[in-house]
Image 1 (cartoon, rainbow over the protein chains, first blue to last red):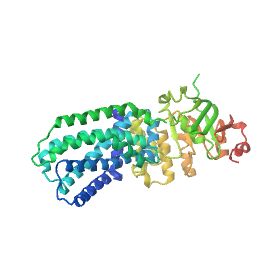
Image 2: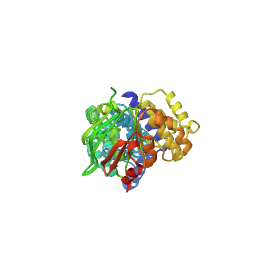
Image 3: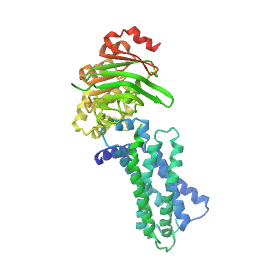
Image 4: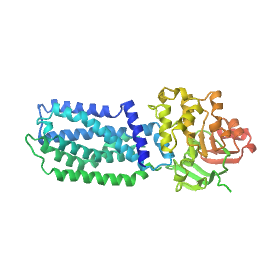
Length: 224
Length: 227
């Protein structure tokens, strides 16, 4: 299964590298939204709850773009049929798609978080950077698991651009609460992480639950 | 005695309320060729997709090499080569990269990729992205993909579409009678299909109009399917 997942992941990353259809769109969207917030809020800098909320809501909305594109090549170019014809464990497709989305999200955040710090964030980003990276990675795992599941569900629908946000965003509310709450103290001047362990446990639990759900049901999603 | 390549008995498949296949009964021996004839929308592609395990049968019995579908579909995958309307190739990848991906899915040695590229005459264009290839070249690459794993059963939907005569002849060892594989051949070339088939199945609006040895079906009867 791992070998098959690695083959699909390698293929997906190669296609994204060549076509640049997902990550650049996600990054451009995120930076544009931060610029809009910068002028729309008419404030030079944000901190605390507002900063954390703006960061996470924007990242989640950008993730919708990646989730919508995740099965695009499979759907439009028959890749899913070719995969289903092969004697492989179908769960490998989920593992590969979730891993690809995780890579896209990390790539997005490498651009988006510094842009957020420059355009909107008041306190110094470097003060809580290790904690922020940990929160981002845990949130990315959960988002990748749910995103791959939702993308597969919506893949065969003509209304997938509508279905993806309608399904994805309510499902990631617990993740948003955990990630924004964990991040908020890091974005306060001189703030210390409060209840960080509790929120990291929440994010970890969310990741585990959705990974297990996805591994259990993904095979059925690909069935006729 | 070897299991039949295909054994269908009263096969039925619906899309919602619409019946796409009804009462299809066929038995095809290993190495033999079945020509599937019928007008557009007669159910030919649906039949191929059911046999490829991409669609579930809704009623009746369908078995490929003795494995009942859909339950034992996992035993069939890897023994079937499917060449449909879509080439099932990624346009941003080269021919070599596409075949290498399929080789990994099927657990094949990388050397098989080079062998197939040469066999379909695309060795020199193997590193070009699929989107830059002509339709005929894409079809040749699709043939290479469908036969990469040496399947025992070929499901071919207009396999010679977009191919010039020389290319069609060059691909005969892979998808023609010379391949020695059981074949289900969908074609609108009635005379050609009957000439290379052992058995002919006529479909009219999803229902079986006839299923008989190809030599017993005259072209006029077959053409009435398209009236």
